[in-house]
Image 1 (spheres, rainbow, N blue to C red):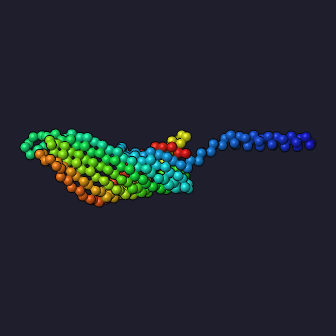
Image 2: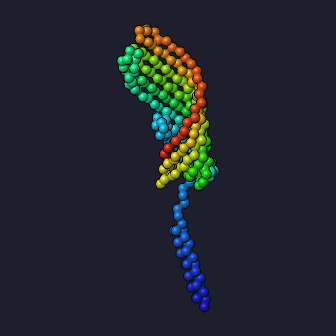
Image 3: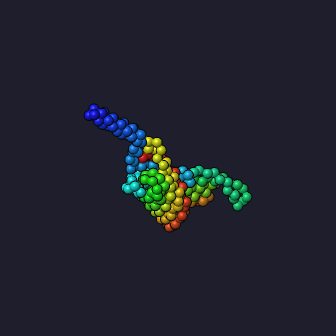
Length: 220
Protein backbone atom coordinates (compact mmCIF):
# COMPACT_ATOMS: atom_id res chain seq x y z
CA UNK A 1 0.00 0.00 0.00
CA UNK A 2 2.83 2.26 0.92
CA UNK A 3 4.58 1.61 -2.40
CA UNK A 4 1.40 2.44 -4.31
CA UNK A 5 1.12 5.79 -2.50
CA UNK A 6 4.77 6.54 -3.22
CA UNK A 7 4.26 5.66 -6.88
CA UNK A 8 1.20 7.92 -7.16
CA UNK A 9 3.08 10.79 -5.50
CA UNK A 10 6.05 10.35 -7.84
CA UNK A 11 3.75 10.28 -10.87
CA UNK A 12 2.01 13.46 -9.71
CA UNK A 13 5.34 15.24 -9.27
CA UNK A 14 6.46 14.07 -12.70
CA UNK A 15 3.27 15.31 -14.37
CA UNK A 16 3.51 18.65 -12.56
CA UNK A 17 7.14 19.04 -13.64
CA UNK A 18 6.25 18.30 -17.27
CA UNK A 19 3.33 20.72 -17.19
CA UNK A 20 5.53 23.45 -15.70
CA UNK A 21 8.26 22.84 -18.28
CA UNK A 22 5.71 22.86 -21.09
CA UNK A 23 4.30 26.15 -19.82
CA UNK A 24 7.76 27.72 -19.78
CA UNK A 25 8.46 26.50 -23.32
CA UNK A 26 5.13 27.79 -24.63
CA UNK A 27 5.49 31.22 -23.00
CA UNK A 28 6.47 33.83 -25.62
CA UNK A 29 9.78 35.62 -25.12
CA UNK A 30 9.50 38.92 -23.29
CA UNK A 31 9.61 41.99 -25.48
CA UNK A 32 12.81 43.97 -24.90
CA UNK A 33 12.42 47.28 -23.09
CA UNK A 34 13.20 50.14 -25.47
CA UNK A 35 13.15 53.57 -23.84
CA UNK A 36 15.41 55.63 -26.17
CA UNK A 37 14.66 56.45 -29.80
CA UNK A 38 17.05 58.12 -32.26
CA UNK A 39 15.58 59.31 -35.57
CA UNK A 40 16.33 61.34 -38.69
CA UNK A 41 13.31 63.24 -40.02
CA UNK A 42 12.61 64.52 -43.54
CA UNK A 43 9.81 66.57 -44.99
CA UNK A 44 8.58 65.61 -48.48
CA UNK A 45 7.60 69.27 -48.83
CA UNK A 46 11.25 70.34 -48.56
CA UNK A 47 13.92 67.64 -48.82
CA UNK A 48 16.62 70.19 -47.96
CA UNK A 49 15.51 70.37 -44.33
CA UNK A 50 16.31 67.56 -41.88
CA UNK A 51 16.13 67.11 -38.12
CA UNK A 52 17.93 64.75 -35.76
CA UNK A 53 15.89 63.78 -32.71
CA UNK A 54 16.72 61.89 -29.53
CA UNK A 55 13.71 61.02 -27.36
CA UNK A 56 13.37 59.27 -24.02
CA UNK A 57 10.37 57.43 -22.58
CA UNK A 58 9.35 59.05 -19.31
CA UNK A 59 6.23 56.97 -18.62
CA UNK A 60 4.06 54.45 -20.53
CA UNK A 61 2.20 57.32 -22.17
CA UNK A 62 4.85 60.06 -22.50
CA UNK A 63 8.16 60.55 -24.33
CA UNK A 64 10.25 63.74 -24.35
CA UNK A 65 12.79 64.64 -27.02
CA UNK A 66 15.28 67.23 -28.22
CA UNK A 67 15.94 68.08 -31.87
CA UNK A 68 18.78 69.50 -33.94
CA UNK A 69 17.48 71.22 -37.11
CA UNK A 70 19.46 71.88 -40.27
CA UNK A 71 18.58 73.09 -43.76
CA UNK A 72 20.45 73.62 -47.02
CA UNK A 73 18.91 74.77 -50.30
CA UNK A 74 20.40 76.14 -53.50
CA UNK A 75 19.07 76.77 -56.99
CA UNK A 76 20.45 78.29 -60.19
CA UNK A 77 17.99 79.38 -62.86
CA UNK A 78 18.40 80.98 -66.28
CA UNK A 79 15.44 83.16 -67.22
CA UNK A 80 14.29 85.07 -70.28
CA UNK A 81 13.20 88.60 -69.42
CA UNK A 82 11.08 90.73 -71.75
CA UNK A 83 12.73 94.17 -71.99
CA UNK A 84 11.09 97.47 -72.91
CA UNK A 85 12.50 97.30 -76.44
CA UNK A 86 10.61 94.06 -77.06
CA UNK A 87 13.71 91.83 -77.15
CA UNK A 88 14.33 88.89 -74.86
CA UNK A 89 17.40 89.25 -72.69
CA UNK A 90 18.83 86.38 -70.64
CA UNK A 91 18.98 86.57 -66.87
CA UNK A 92 20.50 84.36 -64.20
CA UNK A 93 18.97 83.77 -60.78
CA UNK A 94 20.92 82.23 -57.90
CA UNK A 95 19.26 81.42 -54.60
CA UNK A 96 20.82 79.86 -51.52
CA UNK A 97 19.72 79.34 -47.94
CA UNK A 98 21.17 77.79 -44.79
CA UNK A 99 19.47 77.13 -41.48
CA UNK A 100 20.39 75.80 -38.03
CA UNK A 101 18.11 75.38 -35.03
CA UNK A 102 17.24 73.47 -31.88
CA UNK A 103 13.87 72.23 -30.65
CA UNK A 104 12.04 70.32 -27.94
CA UNK A 105 9.14 67.92 -28.37
CA UNK A 106 6.70 65.90 -26.26
CA UNK A 107 4.76 62.86 -27.47
CA UNK A 108 1.58 61.81 -25.68
CA UNK A 109 0.71 58.25 -26.69
CA UNK A 110 -3.00 57.74 -27.23
CA UNK A 111 -2.85 53.92 -27.19
CA UNK A 112 -0.26 51.24 -26.60
CA UNK A 113 2.94 51.86 -24.67
CA UNK A 114 5.62 54.43 -25.48
CA UNK A 115 7.61 54.61 -27.69
CA UNK A 116 5.27 52.69 -30.03
CA UNK A 117 1.76 53.51 -31.16
CA UNK A 118 -0.37 56.55 -32.12
CA UNK A 119 0.54 59.89 -30.54
CA UNK A 120 -0.19 63.61 -30.30
CA UNK A 121 2.93 65.79 -30.27
CA UNK A 122 3.42 69.53 -29.57
CA UNK A 123 6.85 71.01 -30.31
CA UNK A 124 8.81 74.27 -29.99
CA UNK A 125 11.89 75.38 -31.93
CA UNK A 126 14.19 78.37 -32.48
CA UNK A 127 16.32 78.80 -35.61
CA UNK A 128 18.77 81.04 -37.40
CA UNK A 129 18.62 81.32 -41.21
CA UNK A 130 20.83 82.91 -43.87
CA UNK A 131 19.43 83.53 -47.35
CA UNK A 132 20.82 85.16 -50.49
CA UNK A 133 19.34 86.00 -53.87
CA UNK A 134 21.37 87.22 -56.84
CA UNK A 135 20.10 88.33 -60.25
CA UNK A 136 22.30 89.21 -63.24
CA UNK A 137 21.13 90.37 -66.67
CA UNK A 138 22.97 92.38 -69.33
CA UNK A 139 25.06 94.43 -66.94
CA UNK A 140 22.36 94.72 -64.27
CA UNK A 141 23.35 93.11 -60.98
CA UNK A 142 21.08 92.84 -57.94
CA UNK A 143 21.96 91.07 -54.71
CA UNK A 144 19.77 90.61 -51.63
CA UNK A 145 20.86 89.01 -48.36
CA UNK A 146 18.61 88.10 -45.46
CA UNK A 147 19.44 87.15 -41.87
CA UNK A 148 16.54 85.79 -39.85
CA UNK A 149 15.84 84.61 -36.34
CA UNK A 150 12.77 82.39 -36.10
CA UNK A 151 10.58 80.83 -33.44
CA UNK A 152 7.97 78.19 -34.20
CA UNK A 153 5.36 76.03 -32.52
CA UNK A 154 3.76 72.98 -34.12
CA UNK A 155 1.24 70.26 -33.35
CA UNK A 156 1.51 66.86 -35.02
CA UNK A 157 -0.50 63.66 -34.88
CA UNK A 158 1.19 60.47 -35.98
CA UNK A 159 2.22 56.88 -35.42
CA UNK A 160 5.48 55.18 -34.45
CA UNK A 161 6.17 51.56 -35.43
CA UNK A 162 9.15 49.48 -34.27
CA UNK A 163 10.00 46.76 -36.77
CA UNK A 164 12.26 43.77 -36.20
CA UNK A 165 15.08 44.28 -33.73
CA UNK A 166 14.57 48.02 -33.30
CA UNK A 167 14.06 49.73 -36.68
CA UNK A 168 11.80 52.76 -36.19
CA UNK A 169 9.43 54.06 -38.88
CA UNK A 170 7.43 57.14 -37.95
CA UNK A 171 4.96 59.43 -39.73
CA UNK A 172 3.46 62.69 -38.49
CA UNK A 173 1.12 65.30 -39.99
CA UNK A 174 -0.14 68.61 -38.64
CA UNK A 175 0.47 72.35 -38.71
CA UNK A 176 3.09 74.90 -37.70
CA UNK A 177 3.05 78.59 -36.76
CA UNK A 178 6.32 80.45 -37.42
CA UNK A 179 7.39 83.97 -36.47
CA UNK A 180 10.50 85.48 -38.06
CA UNK A 181 12.57 88.59 -37.39
CA UNK A 182 14.52 89.50 -40.54
CA UNK A 183 17.09 92.00 -41.69
CA UNK A 184 17.36 92.42 -45.47
CA UNK A 185 20.23 94.17 -47.23
CA UNK A 186 20.02 94.88 -50.97
CA UNK A 187 22.68 96.12 -53.35
CA UNK A 188 22.31 96.77 -57.06
CA UNK A 189 24.46 98.02 -59.91
CA UNK A 190 22.75 99.38 -63.00
CA UNK A 191 23.97 99.51 -66.56
CA UNK A 192 26.77 102.06 -66.84
CA UNK A 193 27.01 102.59 -63.07
CA UNK A 194 30.40 102.19 -61.41
CA UNK A 195 29.34 102.17 -57.76
CA UNK A 196 26.43 100.12 -56.39
CA UNK A 197 23.45 101.52 -54.52
CA UNK A 198 22.10 99.75 -51.46
CA UNK A 199 19.38 99.68 -48.86
CA UNK A 200 18.62 97.88 -45.61
CA UNK A 201 15.26 97.03 -44.06
CA UNK A 202 13.91 95.07 -41.12
CA UNK A 203 10.79 92.94 -41.17
CA UNK A 204 8.69 90.71 -38.93
CA UNK A 205 6.34 88.08 -40.31
CA UNK A 206 3.95 85.36 -39.13
CA UNK A 207 3.38 82.30 -41.30
CA UNK A 208 1.18 79.21 -40.96
CA UNK A 209 2.35 76.04 -42.69
CA UNK A 210 1.24 72.45 -43.12
CA UNK A 211 3.66 69.83 -41.79
CA UNK A 212 4.30 66.32 -43.13
CA UNK A 213 7.19 64.51 -41.49
CA UNK A 214 8.69 61.09 -42.23
CA UNK A 215 11.24 59.66 -39.79
CA UNK A 216 13.45 56.59 -39.68
CA UNK A 217 15.80 55.54 -36.91
CA UNK A 218 16.54 53.05 -34.17
CA UNK A 219 15.04 52.22 -30.77
CA UNK A 220 17.46 51.30 -27.97
